[in-house]
Length: 187
Ligand SMILES: CC(C)(COP(=O)(O)OP(=O)(O)OC[C@H]1O[C@@H](n2cnc3c(N)ncnc32)[C@H](O)[C@@H]1OP(=O)(O)O)[C@@H](O)C(=O)NCCC(=O)NCCS
Image (cartoon, rainbow, N blue to C red; front, side):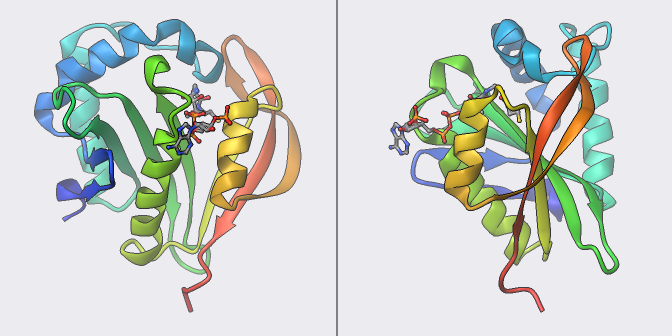
């Protein structure tokens, strides 16, 4: 069921990656190599090959089918529907008394500054809270990433702490500001 999720917002379609998204994902990452670099871990060999993305898509579908993650691709409605313009991912889903996950997101450089990620995340978080029944979504950002901080604040995420040397990104351990959003309607 999770692998068929499609969420529509005013300007976007959010879809679970399908096996025919390999080329679009390869192109999205290639177009945004420098834009994403400060926020990515060491990249595996073959990132720019179709084979890599076919394998990645299979792994994502298995994760999603076993309730470990929900990954969504952002497609512009009425635009080039074969083009991926962003992605967001609810990962590390833990059930039991925690009912929590981490959230990550990226937007194609040429689409930044239009409110599109906020629109996407409002839809995706609604799904995570109402359909996946998650209670806590945790999202963390580097102190220098002001756009990400503003986005999370506008979505209602609150700061819970500061973690030194939290993630190894772009060649070094990076401090992060820790935030979360809690589902007010889950008993
Ligand atoms: C983080 C990232 C997704 C933020 O993108 P973004 O476009 O700024 O996010 P939003 O959807 O919240 O857009 C908000 C901006 O659009 C503007 N905007 C324009 N039209 C708008 C509209 N119709 N509705 C809402 N906002 C609109 C807002 O004023 C705001 O700009 P401002 O922050 O300069 O005031 C993007 O910078 C990115 O992908 N960065 C690289 C990867 C990354 O950092 N990932 C996160 C790691 S923690």
